[in-house]
Amino acid sequence: DTAVSQTPKYLVTQMGNDKSIKCEQNLGHDTMYWYKQDSKKFLKIMFSYNNKELIINETVPNRFSPKSPDKAHLNLHINSLELGDSAVYFCASSQLWGNTEAFFGQGTRLTVV
Amino acid sequence: GENVEQHPSTLSVQEGDSAVIKCTYSDSASNYFPWYKQELGKRPQLIIDIRSNVGEKKDQRIAVTLNKTAKHFSLHITETQPEDSAVYFCAGDDMRFGAGTRLTVKP
Image 1 (cartoon, rainbow over the protein chains, first blue to last red):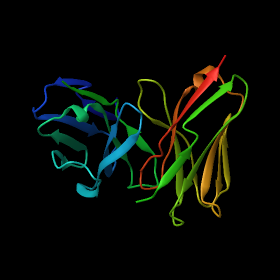
Image 2: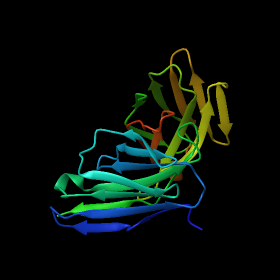
Image 3: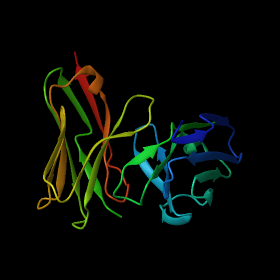
């Protein structure tokens, strides 16, 4: 059983398109996160939800919008995709916010052409 | 949020040598200090963590030490092996990550 799963694993799309990445965790965790990892391997937190409430909203273009329909899901919607959005996006979850181990999904490699 | 600085950015060692990676943090109230390993093309995974009520924790060849006075914590890998080659990240207790250290272990 996969603990944190994201779909799709690969996503190639043209500039200007709108796309979504889905994330689901079956660990019963309260907190979920989205990270962006660029080509230099920096792992930058984008958003964090705790019990479906947004608690971290880093300086991210408002083209990025997270949606948490329930505690087990945190989806990422991206409007008007730009070349600079190309990266690997990781979803993660933890039992509590901070102070506990985070479990990561396998990542979604987004390529904008 | 917590500001975590990680050094060095790259580290190359011979197999069998030790490797040390250091992170400094800014918030003296921080109380959880994890280290993650990310192999090429894989997801980050926790390898060891420490809480502020202890100064050192070991798990076989890896250890983490915490100096609360100086506000830094370090990852120590002894008897390095080629499979230790990866990017290592420290994180603050708000889940913001350091910049990462690319460790290369040469056979």
